[in-house]
Length: 331
Image (cartoon, rainbow, N blue to C red; front, side, top):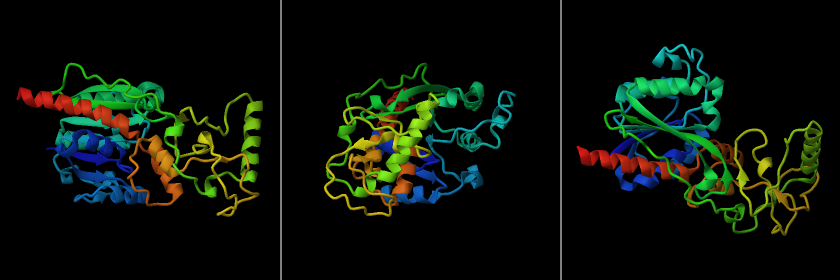
């Protein structure tokens, strides 16, 4: 049985991928997430004996249980001292420092991190170099690769960097990240099976303002603005801020009742243009249909936009599991 800890857990996407890959061979012994609404979703979907701890910066690393695998989807932050080669201390003041101090204390077999693709170029490459150097200084061999979700059974064009660090005493010479598993999925595969509420359909007033916004940006020569996705194509990366929802609009002609169910300006548009639903966003991230959605839509969009693509995590976790098995046989 491998023990794992789930840091910056969000709604548990990374953990879910590892649970799927390891099955009964893994147990989560510590969870940390500060966003209360994310914790609500997490608790509704995972039956844990361990409670969810809030702010990790306030947790003494000695209080964290022993574990074999550390999971962390930490935010991308600049290191104020980056490049000064102070090793561990370079991370002070960032959330990666908390990951590092826990690793230093517990020395898990494997550290797994997910982050935005731009992490490699962030602050002219210094941010990633500090992370890599700290992990190496702590006695780990670091492997990393950018993978695109659309190659792993979901119709979402989402590139993220995945970092796998093995403790040097058990580290392989090489670690191969998975190749694509399934690049055939299209938006049609993830849309709701039945007619959805008119609340997801844009109002005429909002649609007009989006069109104007797009025209203004087009005149300036840039491509900002809303986007309607073809049902037989893939979605853009879902993100929690800005125009995340408006960049992945679809046309769904199944609406039969155009009576508004929320306060809107104008009326429900007759072009059948709608936002995707939170369940569709969950599917874009590869969450199973029995994953419970227990908070309001605004929170759910944020949660899935901030989360990870579960099938990508699972595919990498399967490789990690195979490597740990090989190492056990040697002992």
